Length: 438
Image (cartoon, rainbow, N blue to C red):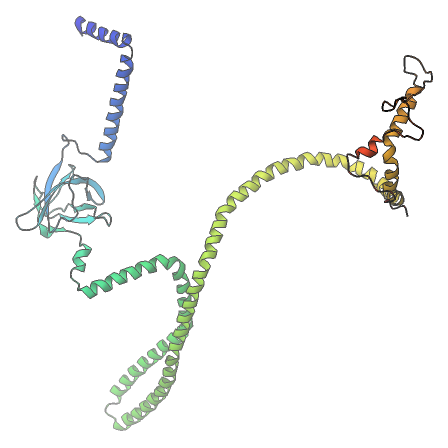
C-alpha cells in the first residue's frame, strides 16, 4: 500500500470518527449488508441452487405427458432414492410428446438402456424423476443424449381414469369414494367392535365349516375308492351290480344327510339377521359411548393439573406435620397430667349448673348499680388512701347539684344512674326474674 493510499484511508477513518452520526450510519449499513448476505446464502441453500460453475451432466428424457413438471422449482432427480440432480427444462416435441431436460451430478454414468419414471411426491402433483441408470451391454449416453419414450413412464392422473367412465359410473364411483371416506373416518370407533362381533360369529360357524370340510373329504375319498373298485371289477357284471346297489344305498344315506344339512343352512339366514341386528345395536351403543369417552378424556386432561396442585399442597402439609410432631410429643406429658383434672372439672360443672341458671337474674339486679358501686368503692378508697400527699386522713364527700339554686339535692332526690339509662355495650340487660334459679 502506497503512502497516498494510507493517507486517504487515514483521512476517511478520521472523517468517520469526527463527523457526528456518520460512523453509526456506516456501521448500520455494514450490519445490514452482512445480514442480507447470510439470509441470501440460507435461502439459496434451501432452494438447492446449482452454481453456474458446477460440473453437471445434462441429458433429456422423452415423456408421453410431462404432467406436473415445473422446471426451476427444484424438482429432484433420484437414483436409488438418493437425490443426484434436478429437472432444469421441459418442452414439447413435434410428435406430441414432452422433452424433459435433466441435470445430474458427475460420477453417475447413464447408459442408453436406462429407464426413467416420473413420480408424484404428494397428491398435489409435485413431481420427481426416479432414474435407473442401466448398464452393460448398453453404451454410455452422450452429453445431451435422449432416452426415448419407450424407456420412460409417467403417472396416470385420476381425471384420465374418470374420463373413461360414463356419467352413471362416475357418479357411482364418487359416491363409493365418499362412503369409503366416511367409513374410514368412523373406523377407529366402529370397526373394532364390528370385527369382534364378526370374529365371534366366525368362531360360532367354525364347527359347521369343519363338518362340511370333513364331509367333502369323505365324499372325495369315497369317489376315489369307487373309481378304483369299478376299474378292478369292470369285467364282473354281478359284482358291479352289487357295487352299484351298495353305492345307491350310500348315496341315499348321503341324500338324507343332505336334507339335514339343507335345514341347517336354512337356519343360517336367521343367524345372519340376528348378527346384523347385534352389529346395529353395537353401533348405536358406540355412538352413545362417544360423549362419555369425550368427558372422560376432558377429565383426564384436567386431572394432571389437579394432581400437581395436590402435590404442591401436600409439600407444605408435610412440613407442617413435621413441625407439629415435636409439639405433639412435648404436649403428651401435659395431657397425661391434665387427665385427672378433667374428671374433676366435669363434676365441678355439674355443681355449677344450678348456680349458672341464677346469673341472669343476679346480673339484672346488680347491673343498674354498677357505676354507683364503682363510684362508692373509688371514693371510699380515696377517702382513706395512704398514698395521698395529705396522708391517710379521713375526708368528707360533698355532692353539689348545679341544677338546684341551693346547690344541694332535695330530700328523696337520687343521682342520675348513667349506666342504667345509657344501656349496656353488649346488648339489653336481662329482665328482672329472667334467670332460672330453680
